[in-house]
Length: 239
Ligand SMILES: Nc1nc2c(ncn2[C@@H]2O[C@H](COP(=O)(O)OP(=O)(O)OP(=O)(O)O)[C@@H](O)[C@H]2O)c(=O)[nH]1
Ligand SMILES: [Mg+2]
Image (cartoon, rainbow, N blue to C red; front, side, top):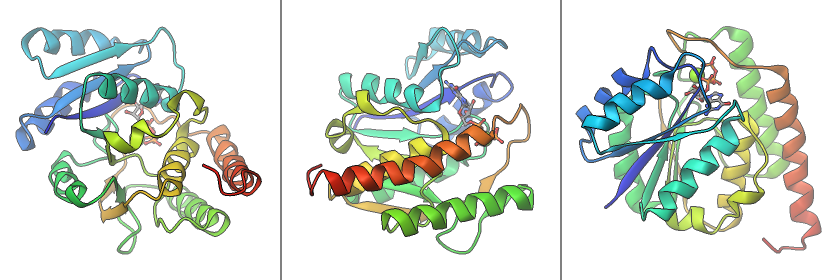
């Protein structure tokens, strides 16, 4: 079973090397692909140093900050082209506990997409201000009501796809970033009739580094949900 985890980075110098060790302490055979958008803090240089001594580490460097969605799509394409069968995604900032990778691996044996969910059993978020928690919670309620997609946490970024399902999604046509990207990928997977499972995870806000949350990310997601809904209605059942 060839598996790889895609990790987009923008200024994650303080986290990335520690994250590699943590991941490999749980799943030594897991490959790691960093998609770095020319981080000014030279995150990519640190990754290159690790690559020189560890052939499980891979790197894609893009010239400028071009957003999370296209970063993931570039990563997914790389992984598919190299024959990886299970493709994970996670953040670099330790918000996603690397230990959970073991539970993802277990669950994906019976699913096409496993989503780490903050809301599947109560609310499992540590260190977020109430405003951000409410925003996230309402964004998920809004998404569920409009799309009808039965997913408690559609905006989270800790997941594992079977490559088979990603191959059936036209990655070149995904334009969204941020929250909207996560929603769009879940929606397209769900519309394919694929098996989607949620597992509870605890999400911890970043300890070091800078937050990149913005109003644009929220508007993008609010709009996308309607776009997906209408695209489905007007395609008369076609996917
Ligand atoms: N390649 C790439 N990675 C990005 C970009 N924006 C964010 N990232 C990375 O994507 C992951 C998630 O971004 P975060 O900034 O942690 O987003 P968040 O968790 O919603 O917000 P905070 O943790 O509060 O900053 C992290 O690993 C970031 O370094 C981008 O434009 N390009
Ligand atoms: Mg984060």
